Image (tube, rainbow, N blue to C red):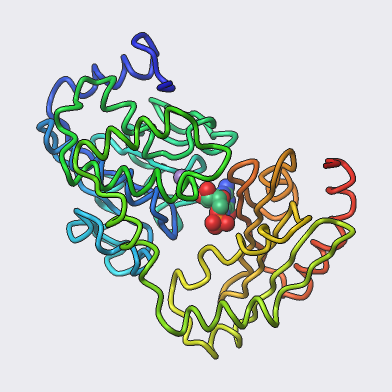
Length: 341
Ligand code: 5GP
Ligand code: MN
């Protein structure tokens, strides 16, 4: 079922807002993934079809396996065009904030986001901050793209979901649901996917475009990581992967190369928590994935400046990598004990 009903207040507010042509800017989170990009580019195309001006601004350049997405060429990236990106964000008549719910998720665009006069939030992560005039927050939706689809249908704009919009939205639904395998996949998700297919999204093309874009070096890094950098702790049902900068250098790391590595740990028999630590120039990035009632967003929000979903969340630390991993191992027994399988 759609997360919206005909009299949902945020829907009524948005309908009123879009009743005359607006100058819209759409922003999403740092390191945009398939859902962030799909929802942003899909909404951009749909808003334009509805007679509005719409421009997408990304906090940084997305991984190259997502550059094929329809509309990507017209987006501005703040790492390559910081002043233009900041100006667009702070001076937007309407600023759509998609697939994140805390202002600090947009990197160097945070100040501009806070300065924008009118923000509309559409997001599916836990515990949204209140920084938007209109908030669509639904933690049961598997993807922000699914929410954008529901909003467009509720606005009676379904006819404007053309092949490009459908392809963008399908991509995010597919990637954020783990290709329809995570527990967030509902009958509604599959109905939305079917509707997007009828509008022109081609599942095998999208899957192949996203998944079959490995460089040789990335696959070799994956093999090395699993063989040399993963430790399983059976007593905690936990798999831990730790990658140092020198490991990345050895395999000519490119942005996006470690995307999805964390999931391999979770596929081990008996493992219900997978942790991934990667050393980046300015910080250690942490990804956690879990099965069942093991709320990794709460854990990361309490200890590692992070958040996300109950079973998939991220965080970071500016401490040295060995210290971050040691701290995690200290906290692990209590976290597991508090949430028995
Ligand atoms: P990933 O581990 O793939 O980076 O992220 C998993 C989920 O957690 C995604 O939905 C992502 O948006 C969210 N996430 C990742 N890093 C952070 C973070 O530092 N803070 C918060 N609040 N969410 C994050
Ligand atoms: Mn998402």
